[in-house]
Image 1 (tube, rainbow, N blue to C red):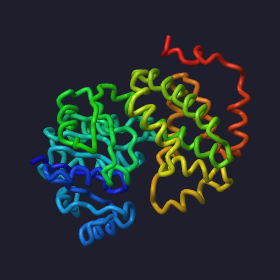
Image 2 (cartoon, rainbow, N blue to C red):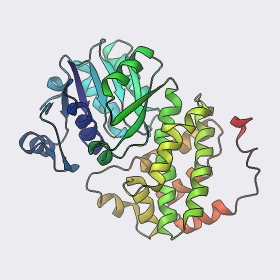
Image 3 (spheres, rainbow, N blue to C red):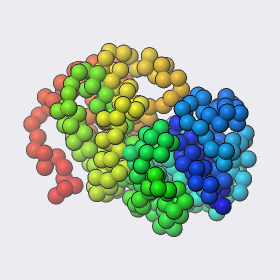
Image 4 (tube, rainbow, N blue to C red):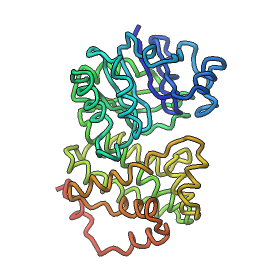
Length: 344
């Protein structure tokens, strides 16, 4: 029986623990930073703070320390917010072993370094533990509540390590939770991170009262700029047409459960970002952090990302949302094919 540690008990981490625990073939440990989350999980089998609607199986234990969570684990799943990934793996480093497999289920970029999460994990473990970790990235269209209530869901596990991808696919999959393998870690991780930025823009359009025409155009052009950056960074254009690219983009741009879309909608309605963040009660909209990192990464690779640039101006420079959308619509005329060189 595999021992799996899920590090991070937000909605997505709790949902993954429910998936892994419901089959009965794993010993799952769900580690939560917040004492009140640990208490509610232990006493009521519910995550009252972040995921109050779903019971957590008895097969999921709730350790009180990282040492307890990681002891003799085969697979370690990181589900912490992107800006806490480095610190968490630094804290975990004393308990990590070379035989462990690591799966990142965090969708974001580190603001300070512009690194993807698997790169952060690799950097920390190599420098502090002295071994090269075996790492994969789990991504794709997945609202936590729908996964937990057993709606059919398909995701991607990406790794250059074929054995890791095979094992995670086999261990995580069940009839309601299907995993596909992919060796394009760059594309899968960037797809999962960048779609959050476009989802904020989709929310802005909704908040401004725009209809389906606007969202369809935004998704299409958003996919185009996501693909430009992914290819420039070494990813594959094909990946961006798959689950971790187009699939996740459509979900977060159109689904009412998307936190990033909700942030954009509130911006479109005229609320200010600090007020919106304060009202989220600790929930994280990764796109708020990813926007600046994505724009910096685009500048590094000389990639044009107009939607990302306008969302950065709205989020971090106080630009009125309606003005941002107007500037996107009044840019100099382009040829659709010439702006997508990866298709040639």
